[in-house]
Structure formats: structure tokens, C-alpha cells
Length: 494
Ligand code: NAD
Image (cartoon, rainbow, N blue to C red; front, side, top):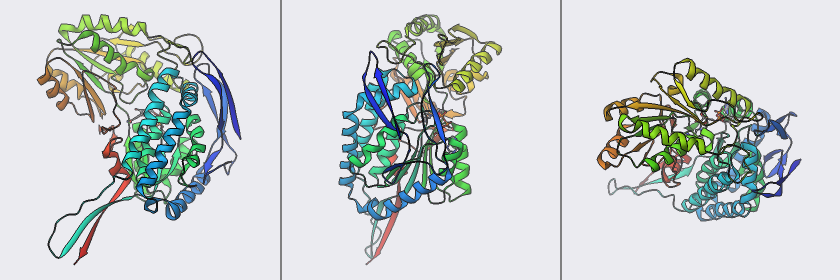
């Protein structure tokens, strides 16, 4: 079964047909137990379509298919150069249908079409091509020991990998996982977010067209607590690669430890600080700090949600930052000038409004925003809080919405201490024209990514991941490959 959507919008006109079943062993199938999940349009809360909901029984069938494919026609049986060619072909197919994929992402997530097209879809294509290039360059070393021995290392595929992804960048997060997983020769079972399954489903028919043998990539949609849980429990899954909340990451690690001790990489939440010193280029800093927190409606794990501003520039920064936030156009994702669409769901909407309420109750000041935008869907005004104190919930917890907490500071030491006053450690940004200070502060903040004079500026070739409770392992760059391979030492007695 499938569903067809007719887009007739200022940004995109066209028809998209998306299969709605589970994709196992190269075919779309119905789940063993009948069940569906409604896909909701966040712009108006109306149901777009329903897709199949898989359960443990479907996960088991998918894992068997993946294992069989891995053993019989994948892994190191297929030379790296060929795996790379398939990934490049997949990228070509995605590129040929980029507008349609962007439209589906805009419909499903509510992000602006332009942002989906130039951000999400390009990043997905880029990641597939980046790892296509690596597929024939995964190399071991020979290691000198003594003259009676030849010793070398091999990077072998791990086997069957379960990839569980969130809803904020559905296709991009999926590509960041299948790129290195397939380049290294693993078979994959994808579990998209139940909130945003459309682009993942639309991608499935392209795997065969790109040349991947049946069973190498499978997709089981379903609820996290059912299909996601079953995948992380399965005794024949060798690894889970997960992006999502810290709470779920914790559960997955616990499940892995109680079952077959499968490997895990976890890309989790954040509460990233932006530290702004007196001597900055104000216009550029405002632009980046705004992109830091308001990009993707604040639904980014790296969102610069705590903005520390030095006293000497505080008033000027706040004025310019406020003007910039007020200029962000909130509305229909398909309107050409939209910057910010709706939040993903009713639940997230309520959660964010709950944080705004708690900020007010704790004594912070709503400088601008703080209310629902419009009267349908899940839109929230870009919101700026001032008078924030270190232990307030809005300063400590990940809100995952367009809500910035501004905090005044005096000295560099104080800024570093406050920036590090969090359980998270995903990213940070430092704004100053003083190069020594920029580097000193960037090195002092406990985070996997440090941006100097920018924020949310990603590169496929750089490792991405968290310190502290923001995760385990790294995505992207050469570093991700070590998380999709097993390292073997071979000793040859001569
Ligand atoms: P989530 O943890 O609720 O869900 C993520 C995925 O996990 C979904 O596919 C869900 O179905 C699945 N899941 C839920 N419960 C599960 C369980 N018990 N076992 C296995 N799978 C389960 O997160 P979300 O709300 O979709 O995404 C938002 C979170 O993701 C935020 O905390 C954000 O910071 C984080 N995130 C992190 C990164 C990063 O790279 N560090 C990137 C994007 C988002």
C-alpha cells in the first residue's frame, strides 16, 4: 500500500507517492500484527496518512533478512569500491528527486521547504557521497613486532546494525548512519521516528535501484517503546546506532548491557552555551547566535540555548538580538519567506509551553515571545528570556524549542564555569575578536564541538558527538568509521 500527496505550493508543485508498509528483504510487506501509526501535519494537526507499525515479530524477520544478506552477499564479499559505487548511486537518485524529498520533509516535520532543500537534503546527499569515498579506503596497518612475526590489523564490518533516528532531521540523521554503516559493509535495519517516517519510506525503493542486494537495508517503522525496544533487545543485532534523547539513550544502553552486550553509539541531547565577549563584531554575532538557537525552530541537539553575554555589550546585544528574532518569519513551511514553521507535535508544543511557564514562575523575564503563534498547529513565537539564574529549569534542561535564555557575565573565568555547569557536553560557541581568548575558552568548555565566531555550522568531514551525558562515540568524518567496524589484530608466525 502507498499514499500519494499532491503538492501545490509556492515552493513546490508535484506529486509524491510514498509506500507505507515495512521494507524487509527488498520488498514492502504488511506487519505481522495489524497496526498503523497516524502521520500528523504539524501545521494544522490534521492526519496526513497512516503507515504500518511494526512490532517485535517484524523486527525479528528484518534481523533474519539482514543477517542472511550480510552472510551471503554483503560485508567483505563485496569489494569496498563496489559498496562506494552503490552509495554514490543512491546519492544520485536522491539528488534527482531532491525537491520531492524536501517537500516531504517540510510536510512531515514542518520545516521550511527552502531549509529542507538546502539543508537536510543536501547534507544527506553529501554524507552518502562522503562515505562512498571512504568505502575503499578503510585500511589496517602492518605493525612491526619481531622478525619471526608478521602482524597487521583489519577493520571488519560489525555485522547487523540497528539505526534508530529522531524526528528533527529525519533523512539527514538516517544518512549519517547508513553512509558509514554501508561503506564499512554492515547490513542495516532502520527505525525512523514514528512522528516522521515519510522520507525514510520514500528512500527504500531507491536501495535496489542503487544496487544494494535485498536485505542489506531494511526499514521497520514503529513506536520507540515497541519496535525500537525490540531492535535494541534483539540477540542477533550487533550494534545500535542511536540519535535521540538522553533518556532513550540510557534505556538503549541498559538494554544492550542486559542482552548480548551489543555495541552502542549514542548521539543525545544538549544545552549548548554561546559565550559572547565585549569585543565582538555585533552584527555577525547576532546572526550566528540567532541561527544557533532558532535554526530548525530550536529543535536541534546543538541549539545554543544558553547565551552568556559580557556586561559591556549586554544591552547592545540584547537590542540587536531581539530585533533579529522579531524579524524571523513564522508560518507556512511552503511560503517562500518562512524561516520558522511549527514544532513537531502537540506533545512537544505542550512541553515547550510548560518550560516557558516554569521560566516565568522561577522569576526569569519573558523579554519577547512566550506565546503560541496563530491559532492552529504547533507554532510558538521565538522567545527570549532574560534575568535567568543558573539553576532554573530553563537554564539546565533541554527545551528543544525556540527559547533562548540570556545570562549576563563579567569575567572569562565566570563564563567558563557557568558554561560548564550542565550535565550535557555536545557543543559550544565563543564569540570574540581576541584569538588567544577564543582558543582558550573553546578549549576550556567541555563539549564535543567548539565553534569560534559561528554556531551550528556543520562539516561532514569533522567528528560530531558529545562529552558528558550528550553521548558516546562519534558520527561523521573518518572517526565514525571506527564505530562501524571491528578491529582485528592478525599475528602470523613465520
Ligand atoms: P526520542 O529519544 O524520543 O526518540 C528517538 C528515537 O528513539 C525514535 O525513533 C523513537 O521511536 C526511538 N525510541 C523511543 N523509545 C525507545 C526505546 N525504549 N528503545 C528504542 N528506541 C526508542 O527523541 P526525539 O524526541 O525523537 O528526538 C529529540 C532528541 O534527540 C533531543 O533530545 C535531541 O537533543 C536529540 N538529538 C540529538 C542529536 C545528536 O546528534 N546528538 C541530533 C538530533 C537530535
